Image (cartoon, rainbow, N blue to C red; front, side):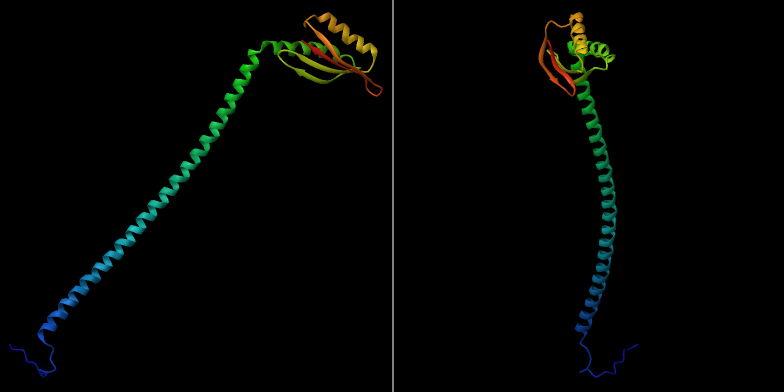
Length: 176
């Protein structure tokens, strides 16, 4: 069958333009499909990386918590190490523990006398100093007689002796 064209030849579209418009429409359909595929791929990649980013943030928070707990453990370990070093230092210094025992004997002996009270105690490995308040001369005599009887220290020096009418005799003894 033949094609019948009722449009005059002057108004008809040349065949090259028809071919070109067909090619352009095919290219535009292809580019539209390519654009849709690119947009869908981009959206998919964005969703994938947002999930991955959330997973990384969760892992980061877990690591921060672990670092915090490790820092606390390190602090506790450091404190324990420091305490052990101090305990070792104290145990190595037996003379100081002997001084503490001797002072305990002295304080126990004076505890029964209400006229004697301790105001300051300084214990050291080489020397110790005790400051006492004695309300009466009898209590003062008791202190000196106890110290004379113990013979634990080589030298006991009376570093200060004073009298206050309100509190009594204030004396400071240096043990070496």
